[in-house]
Image (cartoon, rainbow, N blue to C red; front, side, top):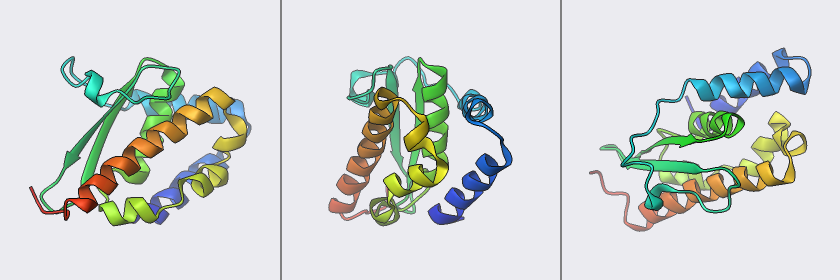
Length: 145
């Protein structure tokens, strides 16, 4: 499944839900499905700057050059936002990550208008961290591990 297909799937799921109260519950439910990070993974190196909540993202290069992401937060709604980001970005090649328009995707899902300014800033900080890791991998020649 491509990143665009993952976005279409998320958009269809959101469209099935009525109002934003239902959508918030769904986002929180998505976050409950995340595997927790270990204490070691909750390190300063994995911490995402620019988020009001505690957020950690782990980037794992795969043998085929793709990047796998895992994440966690101390806030339920933020865990859900991480789950959305992982559905969009995890398992993708760096070039696909870097060409994907995250802002347009968040607009399509209605997240941009539904989140507080603080949560939106955190969402974009997480996205920028993913993009930064993808750019670093791309610059390194994206050689398999």
